[in-house]
Image 1 (cartoon, one colour):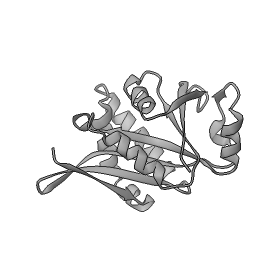
Image 2 (cartoon, one colour; image 1 turned 90 degrees about the horizontal axis):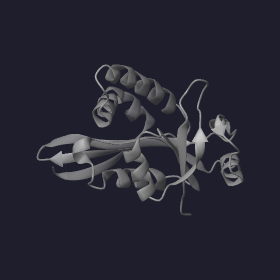
Image 3 (cartoon, helix red, strand yellow; image 1 turned 90 degrees about the vertical axis):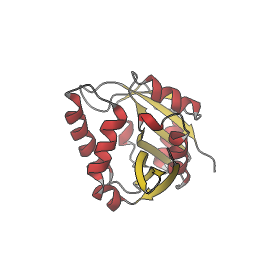
Image 4 (cartoon, helix red, strand yellow; image 1 turned 180 degrees about the vertical axis):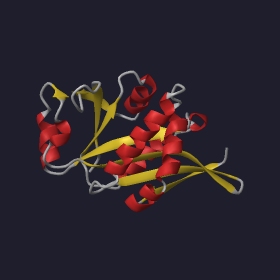
Length: 185
């Protein structure tokens, strides 16, 4: 493994690289046989929707080993829409501060963050989320996590994220954990 380089991708670059990003997704999440295709398709559909959001941003990590650059991970996100629609399905009452910051356009959602298994425990995930969150003027960052993904939950908590509650994105969808992190000015 060589030195890791980080680069920011525009929405057009991300859309153009969507097949490679979907391959990265499948490799990073190590799905059970038979699930890879369905989850790859879900990722592609979600990415196609998310790249259209105003303020979409993506950071990719590439491992440069000799003459070859190999993907190591990526993170992307976007500012929440001020109308608060993202919070629909929140279990309980949305905290006042989160509502206020959403209405003022100061909340950024991390749509996905992934690191290939062979590149984990090298600080790549931490640097991806730091670079992603450093670019905007958000005061609060949020992420939805599968409650069964203990590794992701432990990583985000180690990076200073705290539980904010639970959210059911749609009817019949699984309940996801909402983690949040206040961002420096």
